[in-house]
Amino acid sequence: MIAEIPELQKKRAYNIIWNAAADYGFTPDFKFYTLDGVADLYWNTVIGLAHKHYEYGKLKKLFQGLEAEEDAGIYEALLWLGLENALVAREQEARPVLLSLRRDYARQYLERFGADYTEDDRFYDFLAKAHYRRVLGLPVQLTRYDTALLDELEFSPDLDTDALVEEAKRLLQKWFHIRAEEKAREHHPLSLPFLHRREERRRGKAKLRPFGIGLAEHPHASDGGSEMPEDPMARPSSLTAEELRAFIAGKYGRSVLNPEQTAALERRLCTGNHLNCHLHITRGDPEPAVIQNAFEALQKQREAAQIARNRAVFYQNEARNRVAIARLAEKIQNSVLLYLQPYTVRANAGELEGGRVWRMLKLDDPDVFLRHENANAGDVSVDILLDASTSQQGRLESISGQACCIAEALTRCGIPCRLMSFCSMTGYTILRIYRDYNEVNRNERIFDYVSNGCNRDGLAVRAVHELMNASPCEHRLLIILSDVKPQDVVRIYLRDDDSFIPYEKENGVRDTAYEVRRARADGIAVICVFTGEDEDLPAAKTVYGRDFARIQSVDQLADTVGLLIQNQIKNL
Image (cartoon, rainbow, N blue to C red; front, top):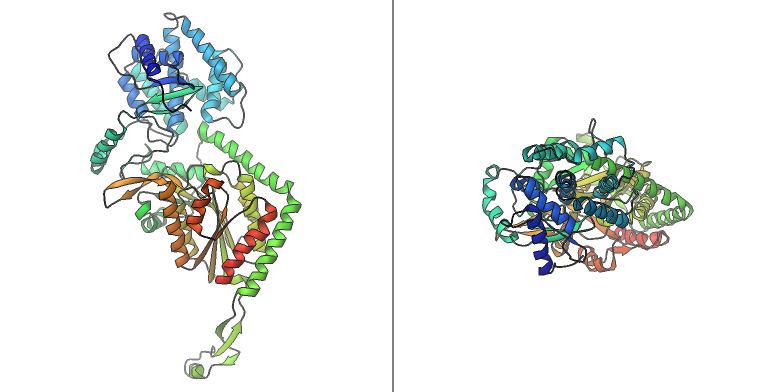
């Protein structure tokens, strides 16, 4: 992507917009360019026509109401498709060349992204392809559900400004469960000074981001959720708190905790660096009677395909995986027998403890003997936590396969094991439980592992630490499969200077390292199976010290993970 648009092309974009609007008395906010930084004639003309035919201030408020949404860029681009449809129809008699420009753009779009639908299409591209196929008179092969969405999206030219805005809001609410409207600031009076400074900092700092076959630029450009309001009182969504929690439950599955338990957990854990964050712990069980919008329906289809791939890849290499499981189980069992020390318990038989004989006589307590027992695998519990953020895309089959092998090996050794994953979205860190300690026959549920959203590693480790404190076992081990690349949309609030820093890079790494140290100080052994790229190895060393390893293939699983587990059991 070009880093900066040449001034000459910026001026050309202005002139195209002003000419279409027949008005030179305003400063355009949206501007469009080709990938090489040339002002786009077609789309800048569409922008100018939007100023000409509608009360543009009302449209601007509509777009501003989308800024805080996780997928703001997608919703914004879809609305422009709808506006384009209405504006071309309104202006085609006065500007016959507009139809030609539109068809040229449609052909270029389909040439660039392919005329046929693929499972790798983003949601916007999926609908945009159908839209431009209609422009060119090509057949549109959509489901009845998606056809209805596209029909409603392609706004009628007969709508005036108010009717069009209301239609857009209705569409966003119906299909995407969001409200494209600015929250009244009086709802959060303490946030006013921060919001004011935020606008001052952002004013005049336009961003470029992909749009169609080119680039879009406007002063408040959103990258679909990577930048959050720098105000602790501001929500990361236009939904109310109740609506947002319902959305998370509908997307990831209902919570295993009731509202009171969730609130109590958040009061304990969502503090310090995780102030204003939320937790959602689920087993992935769907909420009843939740109607998915088109975006979520498409996502579910892709997730189902990914789950099928996870399972298929594992069983394509079943013989190799079974060998790795057997070797790892042997190493774990040998480590338990070799390193876990014998211990002494009071019992009703064994070596008499003379000083306690009176308890049998006076208190009828039979446990006045000492019995020496060897530690066994039942004294150890293991939690396996998978990073399920979008950065793991492309290696999901490998990670789920590794996790399944580790869980199977632990199960063969009789070691209680819990399988979980984590990601974050709109301020929520989601923990998905695939199997619990006592569910010995559910290791294959890890094939349901898919990627989504961001990853607030520190809060995930803090939450799992809390869950592991309830383990019935004396010794606890946490194995994390991660690329050690923490990033989340909710910023860290610094009380000392009343400022905010992003939860990413060094900030996220330091926070994660702190939570790992806290868990270790509480007696939990923590190791990492590193799944990332070479550039993130320093972060892994910062967070986990020497207790991490990288597995290039499942053939290395037994030796690499076996050694990590062996070292931790040795120190228990």
